[in-house]
Image 1 (cartoon, helix red, strand yellow):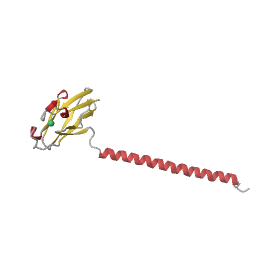
Image 2 (cartoon, rainbow, N blue to C red):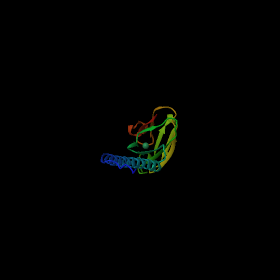
Image 3 (cartoon, protein in one colour):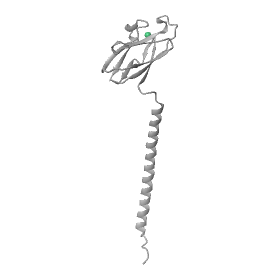
Length: 150
Ligand SMILES: [Cu+2]
C-alpha cells in the first residue's frame, strides 16, 4: 500500500496553516526586535546620563534656576552651583552664595565659577534656600528658592 496523498481540502488547510505559522514568526521577530531596540536605548541612556543625584543650579542677579529643587530624603545629592555673573557686578562683585541654614548648607560661588557640594536632607518637607551676597539678599524674592525633600 502506498502513502495516502492529502486531499485537495487537506492541502489547502496545510497551506493556510503554514501561512499562519509564517505570520506568527514574523510578528514575533518584529516584536522581539522592538523590545531589543527599547532595551538598547535604555542602556544607552543610562550610560550617557550624568551621575545620579547631581542637580545643576544656575545663579545670577536674576535668581536661581531652577529655584525649586526636589530631592529624596536620606540620600546624598550633589549640587553643582554655576555662577553666570562676572566680577563687573557692582553689587557683591559677581559673587553669589547658596544658603540653607536648616540643612546646614552655606556655599559660595565666585564670578563665572562653579562649585559642587553635597546636600543630605533626612527630614521630609520644604526648606528655603537663598543668596544673601547680592541686591537685597535673602529679602529679594528672586534670590530665594525651595528645597523639597520627599
Ligand atoms: Cu546672589
